[in-house]
Length: 101
Image (tube, rainbow, N blue to C red; front, side):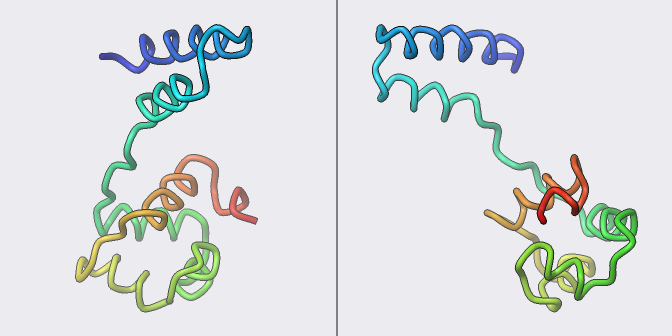
């Protein structure tokens, strides 16, 4: 299902919830359905992102609340970011590190 359709349905269900017609469980289910999982980033994409933000690996790590060695391992491909770190990288990709302050 396309994200435009899901967004439209989500808006309708949100309006129903605000009107007291849809319960909180239904609203949570639609919220979950409309959240897209964070897509993986390649090692080169992570490095390009950091360089775009003009920060060193240790400073980038501080923004993301991870260790400098984690950033280094991501950029060398030794490990891949996941979970909250991956989501934060996607936020930085879209809005810049200033969004994390």
